Amino acid sequence: MKVMIGVFDSGSGGLSVLKELIRLMPEQEYVYYSDSAHCPYGEKTQDYIIDRARVITRLLMEKGAQIIVVACNTATAAAIATLRQEFDIPFIGMEPAVKPAALGTKSGVIGVLATAGTLKASKYLKTKGNFEDGCRIVEHVGKDFVELVERGVLEGPEAEATVRESLYPLLDEGADIVVLGCTHYPFLLPVMEREAARWASAAPGRIAEVRFIDPAPAVARQTRRVMEDSGLLPASAPAGDSSPSVQLLCSGSPDTLKTLFKLAIS
Ligand code: DGL
Image 1: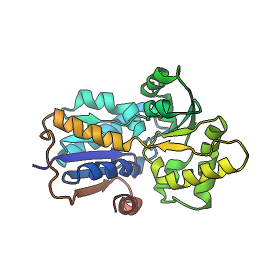
Image 2: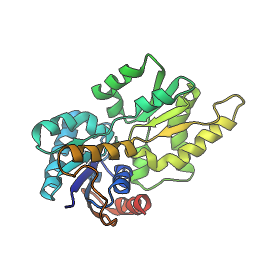
Image 3: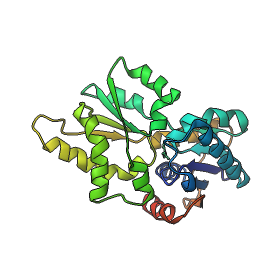
Image 4: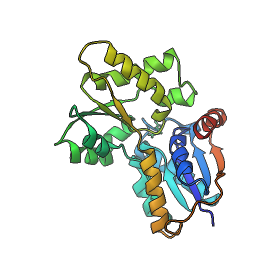
């Protein structure tokens, strides 16, 4: 029996999570909702995001979703507690991967890139508080990253300049690990890696290798665990046929969604 997994984000960013879900569970069915007509969520109020999350959850459940992955850090921080109270299916959320970064840093400084909404949410502040004794945590909003990805601009001078503006302050502070706290940001990873290398070679004595952490693979594994624990999936179920069925839905123009889907899932 296939399980229908609902996945949503403010836009196409959640495809970076869908990709990992499909990699882990290619035999399941997926319905993905991009709320691109209301993107970005990063600067919106909590009430606004909760309303959107409710509307999208209803729609995904009407489509048959039995479990929902909130593939958006901002929506998770703003709305997952309400969704869990109001709907009777399991929800999986995103959280900036501060723990593995804190365990892995050699410089003692970790950087977090996320939206303004995520960085000021109590969920994130609590996680941060748990690790601040062992390391210093520096943060920056990925300014215009979401807009760039939604326009499908993943390479070139504009992407490089945009990435530099938000990434370099973290590197200047000594971060050797940067947590990607927004699901749109992994689409800019190749640019980020190149810009980090450029920063390192611009002056002697700089940290030569900066690591980036995307929590999506861990979220996919957590989704599978919850499916097993809630009886949706028999424990250690064998993988079935490996061509996933994916339905893409979108509140705005589907062009970027289709392009980035091909890029992410091919
Ligand atoms: N992908 C969303 C996140 O993970 C994007 C936020 C936004 O729409 O600003 O936070």
